Length: 368
Image (tube, rainbow, N blue to C red; front, side):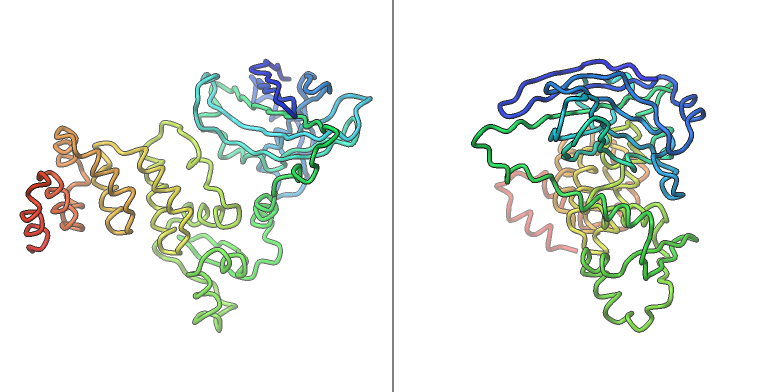
């Protein structure tokens, strides 16, 4: 099924680490021929004096319905003599044909103790097939999964308390979002229904807390209508609330700038509306990286309307170039910026004046 290429191997003071790439060159055939709950495995490789294999489940490792839409990946210990091996396990994706380039990747990492041969650990919900198919990670029916294995070795005086596995709370809450066990609130958004848990929403958002345990508490049994948001945006908002991570399209650089800008912009509005500051900052960072002449006007309006100082400064910096400024004025978003945020254009014009004309700047900013 899979060919493994050793990309890098490095010795670290208290551990041994290696990176391997699992090359899947017939994604569609393997998916078609492998039943749900069944896997195909890589050829063995060695890290830290132990043999390992990767189990790849093209249709999910479980038979439950909500798991069916996912790809699952696991690392399994393959050495008969190995016992209680502690290892950090990471899996990530990267665009086919981009091996070696420092691009963003979809990744998950955890730490686990492997008791004996055949014991495994990994990610049942590694990535949705719907998110993968059509993305930059699947090209010409080829998929690349990187496996990062770090075997932890104890010295005589090692402090084992420092080797507590990293938190996997986000994974459990993500699973809860998928299963919706115990959900007690329903949202209607753009013709779709979403189930959620009041307590989790309230813990993550002061706005949700006020809505769900304040004035709207008496209507606890009624669905909540949200008329000014797209279903995909609300779905991504819920994903972040439960997992503290943005959707895959926010974590990658897939070259589809307009789609990425649209989602980041909509999520910034949603994050501002529900007072989810970390998501707002993530969206700001994404938008700052994608600024160009076509979208800078829209981004500047967004920054002004939602008090995004960082995005506003990035737009102003981009527009210090006269050619960029002229291109913005010829863009489709310029008229919207003029009509919706005239004050920010005044502020932009003032920024071009030299510092010694502070009095003139003050006059302009206080003149309507």
